[in-house]
Image (cartoon, rainbow, N blue to C red; front, side):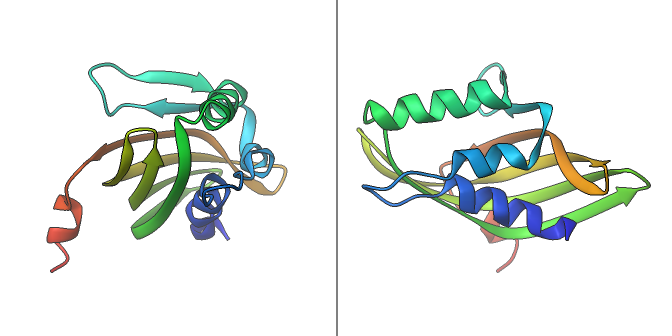
Length: 138
């Protein structure tokens, strides 16, 4: 089901210290030409799926990323024929060389129906190091 895609992506990205994420499965949720767009800095970082996966693998191998736990907080889905948009608010617990941090943000998934399967064409996000997304739910 289309609404399960963000949780499946987060499961692929998440991993505990001493283990590795399932990045091959992650790639299967995207079209071959899909892109990741990190827009949390001063300018967007845009990478094709396989370049993004290579970057994550490299950062794990060199110890920059020790563990990731990403979970969905809230979601909205819009579909129109063969296209869809999912807005997924998340919590990210990240451990790296510099220690641990918790971030909150939004992933925006653009999807297309491809041979009867929903596939991600683009995933873009922005996040922050506070709990401001959660405050509106209190």
